[in-house]
Image 1 (cartoon, rainbow, N blue to C red):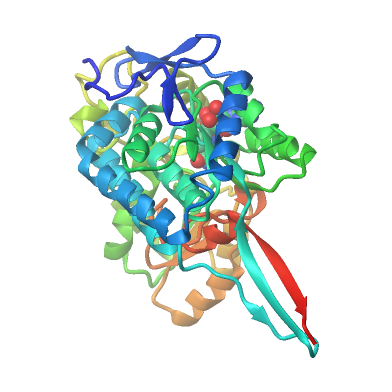
Image 2 (image 1 turned 135 degrees about the vertical axis):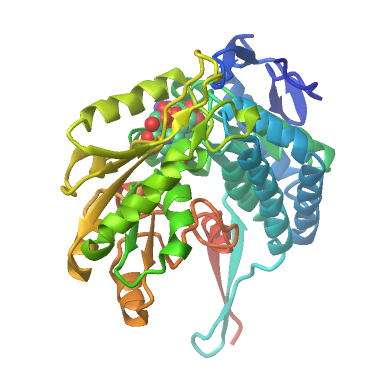
Length: 484
Ligand code: NAD
């Protein structure tokens, strides 16, 4: 199936408001994970393209973009949001074909992208400094200023949502952006850039250079003229990006995934909990940094929860993204190999239930049936490592103390949720859980434009989303005026 007509050449980069071929003319094949066919060719940007993009971003800051007021920036972002909504069908199809995400989920991501633009568009002129009481004869105040040129390295699992939260907040604060989308999925990044230009974003305020991580990504994270890096992806690559940024003494925001638990206590309302227990694990075929891959259940309800989740699992079907089933394929044959490798490693675990792959799903697609596994050892490798596939592990616990110990017993800390009607237990756990977000009687895998988001431990550091992101994408200047 060919791609819909696009208003740009997908083998080009967007630099200084113009679509242009990468300087050395190289391209990469973009693969449709639903059937393994080639969707199109994309640019294989290199350091020379990144250099040009950074120069364009700096020029935008020195010129038209840098001269915009906060109100004007906000209006442009809001207009981008409106245009995103007008292009939801196209964006959803591109994301579905490129990522392998079922169409309904891709559509939700396009709507979330619009929502980020609306949120940051209306927040742009609402962030301000403070006056500080100081010595007699002084007036002291603070100014919130943009960092300058910001680098955005985005993975393949939620391109639209991650671009929305990081590029949206950066532009709202008056930074210019250079975006390096993932080589596995970058069509919506390109379409978003086209929409931004149409909405009146000045040339150079946003530049997009697709390419390989070790080439374009490494060139961006190590460039001396980039003043802030936002990275979402694997722990190993995040560490490399932090090292590169450290050489230039530049701040980084790292969002590196997790092993997020949901804790089900014996008084939990299972009817409320069940859809969240399963959906938070299988959304986007489990390729979600905030996927809930561990379900911790108090012993007295363990059998009941396993039975209820198993029933849902057996009804799950996996197939091509455009068929819009419960799950699509994984992003690539390589990711399928990684996930099936984990399943082989976990052969000693009991399989409570699996879903099925649709009979007519193309053989070349990267399909893996969702697996619900039972595990009494919270230190088992499958209960510790981020699998990034449709695999959830159910672990029993005796009491609150043991639940907290298991929940906190991995290297990660991104999202956690607690299912109990006991208010005191809710409050104790909200404090005790080592996690960037704690949900009580709900779970938000990736959702919540307004909610600050980010991790502790190996889940990363820094916060995106919500108003908090605007602090991260700005720097504070203190002005102390002595006037007697
Ligand atoms: P990755 O971390 O290597 O890639 C993420 C982004 O970083 C991509 O844009 C990539 O091009 C870029 N990149 C890669 N190497 C780079 C480098 N040296 N310098 C700068 N940028 C670089 O992730 P991956 O290889 O696509 O996936 C591997 C694993 O990472 C997955 O199995 C999963 O566990 C994890 N992952 C996590 C998330 C998340 O949202 N937390 C997203 C994608 C992947």
